[in-house]
Image (spheres, helix red, strand yellow):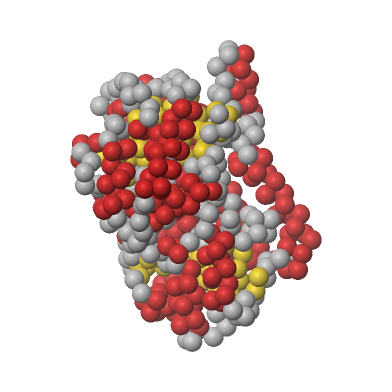
Length: 478
């Protein structure tokens, strides 16, 4: 196993390059220092006495975001879609939206919000994003609840339910001090607040991002009373429609990637391969990768098993697993990583990357672009952001035939869907041997993302939802 250290494996030039991009990303996105017109908007609001509260009872923290101009997305939207977004936004100008999730960085939801929030702001909405400060015990509980909702075995005992309600009450007190026209709560972590909030006429939206195709009945029955007050339940795909929730409340909106994000810049293969070489990859031999947090549902052990089988046919094959531990709502990632590390053993051709000072957004981009195939062999997946990113970059993706991945990828046309280790290994061999096929799959994948999974489409969908619940639909949308 090759465990990559910034000192042992990285030349000084890359240290400076990676450090620069990491510092830039941290300042401008993750820690959200606004600049330009975004900073001016904040200063104007401070003068008017209308600046958002930074911290509320230490339960919710305002997450600053970098400024963004929607005009930057003109190349990534059709003329009709671009005009529709501006039309819808015109009717929603000044709408105050509060969005709440569990972590300011590191997870897929945080990645999405870092792009969605400033883009909505740039078209005239007043959107503030708050993340929870939750106890370690609560995060462990909600990780178990997440897994149960994705049909993993588990049990919620009375103490779990009490902790969920107690934390929900704390979050509700903090939300009660905010002013908004629409409230959006993401995922189960902040959902418990719904039982303790005064229910007026202000519309509420719950956004679920996980695979809810076969939720554990006990976990779902526990959450249903918390979902009941919401005006809309927004899920990724129709396969996640929830029994026990009025069908008229449910909407289906797939997530999307930000083409302007650092990790989604379109590199040449040569640029990508140079960056991979700097962190220890041997470019004279083939390499596959999976970029995902270390979670059993991402199936990293299955990926290693598929790599071992494929290597019997593809001598010298390398595998890279990339995943960091920065998401505060995933308390079991280190434990899973240690299990993977033990399973890999002393194999020098399996590269495990976890250090964010080594593997930043630029390196993620490089691996998704320059690897010979990209895997996301998940056992559950609400929406595969990492798969979509690799498809955007024209790579051949081999993914688990589960959840949202079955909608994102047309099997055999814009990627491959697999259910077993043997199937995964066979597809790896096919893609590595038939590079013409891999190229065609990659081209089809890129076009599919262009057509369905770029941020302007998601912004359009959210504006439509806001108009629907707030009664401000444009004449065209209505």
